[in-house]
Image (cartoon, rainbow, N blue to C red; front, side, top):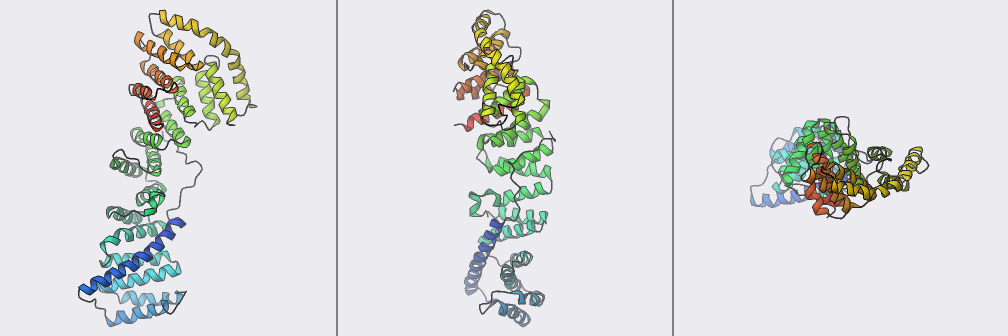
Length: 433
């Protein structure tokens, strides 16, 4: 399973300090800082006035003077900062100094200075409780930008514990602190912790939809740690909640990589899921589908697969793979259709279920899904040689025949090597409403 890597559709992994998120952070810190200052003034009116040493007032005023009188460049404040920090002894002084560092850092676009300022304010104990989560969030982002991942995660976890999530995270989950924690674990390649952290988030959601990024990161962590059970925890909701072609294809690839499940019949049912989800986007998918069916045995279904792959330009009609298999399937399609009624009669009179299964395959190929469903059911009733296989085929025939509820119920009975694939089929069907 470790050889599989989840595709992200060609997207680059977002920087932990994305320009948009950082711009939002800086603007919000400024607003929060002003609001916090107002809150402090209101509290100070009700409480004993803060006292500052003469040394601090002198050093602070020297820095403040640079920022006033309409100044647009606070560079001259930088050499004055050490003296202000050295004079910051009491919590009131640390709070005021931290606020000044934040202002200067914002003007100079100095992330380290901004982070130092916010950390000083938090350490002073003077930040209003309702603003603390937001401040920890920015500390975490600044730390991640400096690639201090552990420090960043510590601050972001504190932000989460205090209930802070940027409002914009509702439409952009990448700036959610929980997403940023997962991303930092991915960048550090701490895959066991990544998988565990993502699984905890999914579990805490208690069945509710979670951001796609959480599931994608979790799946990658499960793959890297070769944990099939955890992989299912993420791949099934990925397909159910976000059934786009990339996610379905990734989930199927992971399922096929587990337990060495790559034999022809299972491969056929996996590729049928890709077909139904419009997720056959690679030549290898088409080749696997056609190869698992065999153009000589299920010719009509092979023709449908090849026609779609050529119409979507996955494998052009001029490609030798297409032309050779299309010719074989075209030659066999007519005789296959002609043989179907006789196979049906043989299945009905046979004492075992083998003949019914074989006839069901032909009717599946012909696209007569109602008859295929009945034949797979007959095979199961008379005695199937592979119960899980026949249940899977019956469910696919039911789904293709428009009987989604029945298909899902049938899939719930599938076990053995097909169980994970059956779960993906169920998730996909659930996503269709």
